[in-house]
Image 1 (cartoon, rainbow, N blue to C red):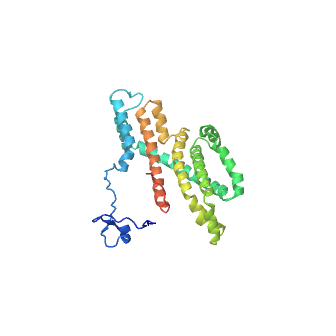
Image 2 (image 1 turned 120 degrees about the vertical axis):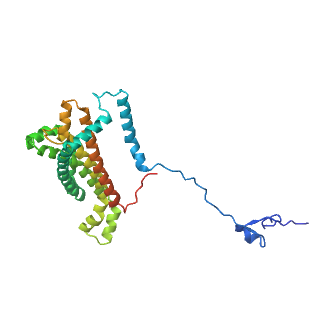
Image 3 (image 1 turned 180 degrees about the vertical axis):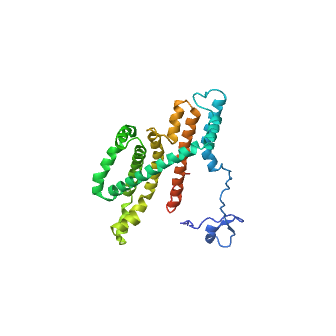
Length: 299
């Protein structure tokens, strides 16, 4: 009786075949095939510079505005053409009318923003760092947050008169809430494990606040700063409706009475440019002040 034995050795390749390097030990004496993996070639495409892409929207809007004005679809009584607005802006700059108004309005915004930022930051620190402060402050601030600004103007006039005080108070009120809520949320959003690690390393209460809590709340504070600056210029529009004799709002009120749409557009563009410059300053401060954070910047 014959028995067949099955071999467990791998099959020998044909003569002349090249053995891969991973199986060279199985077939001594055979030549080795080295496989080189090369990354696929990627075609480099020239992308449009980002500043140009960001400017595409405003430039497109401006071109559409000019086209509608040039074809007569948009009458000058409804909205002046961009050429007329640009010429009016140059004349207002040349006679010093627009720079004076910007200086007066900028002073109001700066003072109101300073007062509102100090009040909002103080309230946020009290509510964020202390549980008792949260119980006493947070619900009260949330209640006042729902009050309409326009409805407070008559009350501010009664309290402060018709000079600069009600305008500054209205701006300060608008600034307080974004500063408060973002700093408060930033403090309460600090990771509890970081606080516990600080305690393990021997940090006491003030050390934890200084080295852990406040740096962790800084991103939220900068977001609140951006919102607060935009709100300050928005509040200025309402504030300068209160018996203003100077400022950008004063120019708008006079232009409304005489149906000067070109002056109104110049004032609106001035508000927008000033707000954009303030936002740019805060964005640069965020970029360099938070360089230690690894953020997702979009795909």
